[in-house]
Image (cartoon, rainbow, N blue to C red):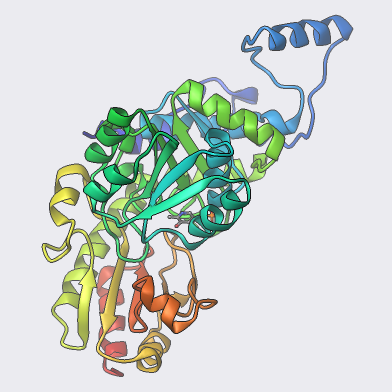
Length: 396
Ligand SMILES: *Cc1c(COP(=O)(O)O)cnc(C)c1O
């Protein structure tokens, strides 16, 4: 279910062959507002806008920007979507989408093992708006169907999840959504459009934190949602009010980062599998979670729907919280840092990064073990990363 043309799309999609000044590269257009030639020009624009026609221009920076539009077209092509909208961060893409499709009295269903802030947005903020949220276990499709009721408007899941890299059966998720007439949204940040294209499996909306693999260089924050023209237009209109927009400079960095998406992700996929296999065979390691290993609970689904398994490996070491930290501190190449998908490898203990504000009991209830490590591979050589892991594991 892959076009096989993702690398080409990542370089070329959305780019006009003829650009201003015969420039090869898309221009950065750093303007907050746009001008009209005269009053008649302004009035004809307003009339067209009221009639719902595409005027081919905008009036103000919160409603659009040419550099932002260029990257939106490329992202839409990468996901096989009619349209995409760029937002100020991955969280903005999730929150703005949920606020677009949910009203007081509605409900959404979300799978567990998801990004902590998404869980917080549903549990705290949506609750204040009288929007209900049910959490179902990832991989339990019977529980998912049972949780659907006439008030359910959205089914939301990540894939692969964080930190256990559980893989959603996107075909089944989409089929359940269609059968019950409920919109499906998948946060596909960990998969990238290279490894999975959720819309091709019938999912309605796909979101990414473009901060991660799409940007790819640990130097920008952005988010994207892709889907049908109708749904993306609705999200765009919400964002014209909410204001979580991206800007021309960020869009340019993203356009630049996307050009190497194909080679970067392929390298990260290869390193991911090699590192996962090395860790699985090491006596100081208790367990490895990587969808490319046959020991992973969702390996079959991953084989069927994903073209490769990504650059994040999670594992538990044979030790407590403190010993695990000693191992992490002994690593020379990865930086201790949240985030993933960039050029530099990053490592962290979820118990001390995302889940630090939680009590040990709360963490354990969510399945976040003290000896769990998440390693997000960058673009270094696999042999160097494996040698580094080997020397650090001597401390366990
Ligand atoms: C990082 C991340 C987000 C949030 O994205 P930001 O760009 O940091 O706002 C959402 N979902 C997943 C799966 C992520 O990894």
